[in-house]
Length: 486
Image 1 (cartoon, one colour):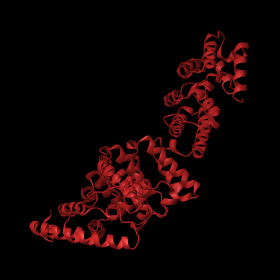
Image 2 (cartoon, rainbow, N blue to C red):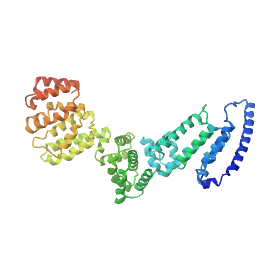
Image 3 (cartoon, helix red, strand yellow):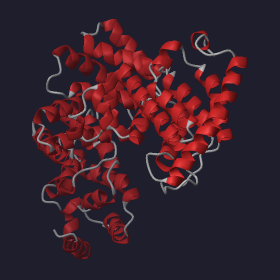
Image 4 (cartoon, helix red, strand yellow):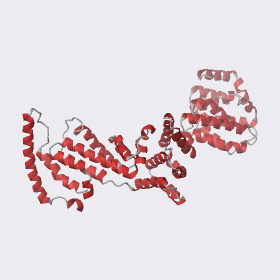
């Protein structure tokens, strides 16, 4: 028991006498009130708990409250109501008051930490997020979501989250908040009070959580010095995965508002590339979804800011919404074709190839509408323009071809029949590249029809530019085109 708290409580022997006297009074009061209820024709069974169970609560409560100091006790009105309700035998009401105190104090802890960061994690819908700004808005977050988000940022631990979730469940099923037939005991109430005190009312952020809070504060406060940026980058390397993801959401939330200060934008832009490698795939996709939701809500400014962050980092363009990616991929394909056909292609192809790789992403996901032009362009540039291999660009082409899915590989297998490819196949270097292409896509061809065509193509004794003229092969191409709507 803290010194401050113990000085305001009766001594142990005195308290024991007071509780004994209180029990006598409680029994007398209980008998009187039950008589009154009975006279008024109201139910009297299972209305209040027994005096002995109430005494258990009152006997254990002082020890539990001893963990709070005098200031904390003075700021806990719902605990007073809990004890009064418990003493009267209304344990269901006591549990409701305990939960009210717990949620009130948890909101205070969130507000003391970083309410904007909390809202960024608690509410994914941009429209609803825009209505959440201050501590008062925390009441708009339901209790379960409040617990989940507090656990997500590790303001409360995993164990605390499970314990508090259970108390919340009991509050919803065994308290005065809802009709119930559950039995509560004085020992359970005292135990739950101790849990709420230790996990919420005495809450101190863990070191890594506190460090994130300080960083977010500094990002908003002023332009970060180079030394601070260097320290932050070192800190990112030590972050647990979930905290790196949380910090990404926090920085994203700081950057996208249209009223963000210039120094805030600069700070985030300098930190973002350092943090990006530590963000997992699901979080990256969530950021892309947020951009799409900004667009859906006609929030053009926030959408533009979100797109800036995704395009700022290598590979970020792959997480743009489908409509953005379609445009970006098509533009990259057009630029790549022009670069490949130009006289200065050895210098112009590599940066465009890298841009295409970034927007396609590591899984090679391409909108279905672009499957044919995407494959045709890659096959074309991989086979060169017949003058030589753009050796700085070729690793990108091989990487992208190795990312082909089954459908894309099936298109590539039939590229010998593409109008843009046929003329190249009469030249020596593209023919060599055609053979290499078949080796790259062969493991991806799982369909029986594709495997049969691959065998026929490899068995063909003429030059590759004559493949589409072979009767057997031409028949297979026709059948495939009809089946795929070409």
